[in-house]
Amino acid sequence: MLNSVRFRLTGWYVAVLCLVLVGFSITIYSLLAQNIRAESDRQLVAAVDVLARSLRHEVEEHEGKVQGEPAFQGVVSTVYRDSFPGIGIGVYEKTRQVAAKPGPEGVVPAPRTTSSETPVYELTSRKTEPWRVAAQSFLVKGAGQYEFVATVSLVPVEAELAGLRQTFFLAIPLALAAAAIGGFLLARKSLAPVVEMSETANRISSKDLSQRIATGNPRDELGKLAATLNRLLGRLEGSFTLQRQFMEDSSHELRTPIYVAHTVAQVTLEQSGRTEQEYREALTTIDQQLGRLQHLVEDMFVLAQADAGAYPLQAVEYDLGETILESVKAAAMLGERNGVSVTGPPLAELPGYGDEGLIRQVILILLDNAVKFTPSGGHVEVSVDQSNAGSYSVIVRDTGPGIPAEAQARIFERFFRVDKSRSRTGEKGSGGAGLGLAIGRWITVMHGGSLDLTESGPTGSVFRATILRRAVVAPDPAA
Image (cartoon, rainbow, N blue to C red):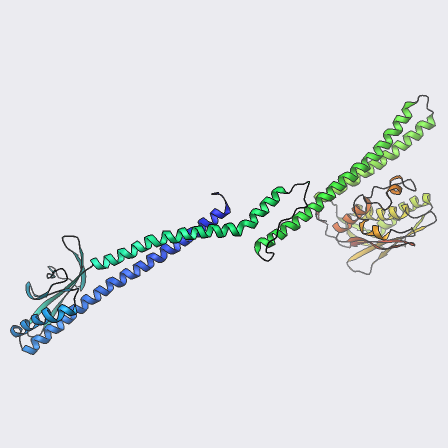
């Protein structure tokens, strides 16, 4: 629980809120305390100023200190008793008390024992009760120097501030508790889709990738995450399906030549006294099957390296025209045995950059398929389209029966064969496993090009391999 995202989110939320509330409370408390104390100081200073003006007025009106002081004493004891109800007032000529008005607790402020330039200062009584005192000396014309002292108790101020502190001490924990509960519930509700995603992911295995995560609101972040995970699961499901199909097809293709070779060897060895001709026929059959097995294993190894992005590409400068010419010659020899003619136009130098061996393999794959599935008396033609300044297009056209429309979209899939029975035994003695076109497309894509079936019908098929003139070859598993 303590390690859950919900708890951590709630903890961070409460911690930040706590810092905000504490900072806000301290600020408010400090400003309020400062304002209350400042107001007390303003009242004290105002009281001292009013006292000085009143004494000066009485002395000047009665033309002397003797008549002025008694008049001033009457003003202090009557008028200022109501004007400054919370303030104690004392007026002194040196240490002689001229007039006084006790505070709420009967306290009369005493004169200062030491001189100070600060008009407002703080004193503490014997009972440790804080007092705020204002004292100032004034020269009254015709009467001399007087010291005016006013004091006010800070107990009410401290009581008010203590009440404010208690309010904060009570309100902040309650606010944090409410925020923690609300934040936890909100985090749990917000992260509920994540929990559901986790539970769904736990139910998904390599044997069952059909389950999908509920997207909820597809427009929010979690909905987009769920959609992304669903797309990932879809790709994984497709990859696992292709992998299982690849394993099944490869196992079947590997088993067939091994079974045929093993059967021929057993049948040959079961009877003694075989002639040399019979042994030669058996060994020829075994050799054909082992050759087919070797070719199949090599193709599977190439595809495995291609899927892992580890196939060693050797990019060099090469002449595509010469490569096509050599490939046509090799295919012509195969076509001669099958009664199929293979021709290509005379080509000038076609400079290119890439893996020349792989480019040759693509052309041979297309020619081999064309010869293999063109009936005797047919024709295979190779041409090159140079209209694009950045690429070459090698076009292989045959006069075979064409590819059925329902199979055209799948011919580049691994181990896919239009006619499996014919392809396995081979009408002309050279069956394939259905890997050639898959390898050819991978090679062209790795060279920045493409391999496509452009047309197919009863009069034949046309394949186009587009290859960049200056290919940037780089292993890429996605290819």
